[in-house]
Amino acid sequence: MIGSISILKFTSQNSHYTKNGKMKAIKPKKLQKGDLIGIISPSSSVDDPAKLEKSVIYLENLGYKVQVGKNVGKVKGYLAGTDTERIDDLHAMFSDKKVKAIFCLRGGYGAARLLDKIDFKLIKNHPKIFVGYSDISALHLAIFYKSGLITFAGPMPGVDFYENVSPFTEDMFWKFLTYSKKLGRINNPDDENILSLNSGTASGRIVGGNLSVISGLIGTEYLPDLKDKILLIEEMGEVPYRIDRMLNQFRLSKMFQGIKGVVIGSFQDCNELDPNKKTLTLGEVITDYFTPIKKPVIYNFRHGHLRNNITVPIGANVKMNATKKYIEISETVVS
Image 1: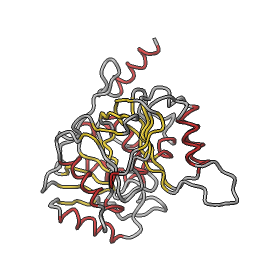
Image 2 (image 1 turned 30 degrees about the horizontal axis):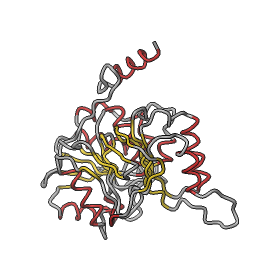
Image 3 (image 1 turned 45 degrees about the vertical axis):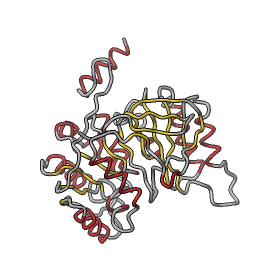
Image 4 (image 1 turned 120 degrees about the vertical axis):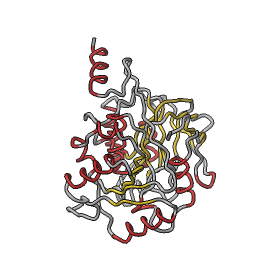
């Protein structure tokens, strides 16, 4: 009876679920030269306005048109404007039929404050490419859960596309957005090895992003059910005991029980640097939580706060082989 109620709840609130509770994903249309890209700041503002100007030039030099949200550049403490200003830009870009893709200028903090204000029906009815990472993970997860739209955890104009652009990052990113065919296996930059913590194989839709952002959504209506999913996590600037706290919240919330596998991205600057502090290593914390789940786990997947950053289509079907140490995108991600 409880299972039936749960399925009815999904189908009444989220029509992209089938009667058996399975999600139907929506793929955005591929980007073509001459298309209009919208830029918004749903989290924090850039520290230097020149980054926005240079990133616009970069996109225009590639043959795209650019439209900057009317509230981009505003500042309210650590936020890029008020909640109303930031949500207005997001809604305006999804409403504008001329805009074919929406790029988030940067991460930071603040995206989760918008979740209960988003018109997810608008997004479902006007699906388009949506890009960002880090704090933008909150939007990826909520948009996929509430509308079924596949989005892209990938490089942002104010971080990655204003100067010294990584050839690896841009090559993979633009392929995801412009190729309406399967990209297959995803390789690390410079042929760096993907590593395995727990062997085995798994397949499912990949969801996740920044660990602290995901943990902040546990218990809310904006985090997708992780059952039968591949969980992706990355982090930056959190010492081991804080990583421990977040992963323990996952464990106590039983979030690991139904997952098919785990992809561990970059944990940048997540070591304790004070030699006088007693600490576990990051590796010990990761091992403590992921070895016992007895599901395939790979790590050293180069996604996250990195110059050479792998774009990940959130909500897409993937296959992972932790025995042979690879991951592949098993479907097209744009139409």
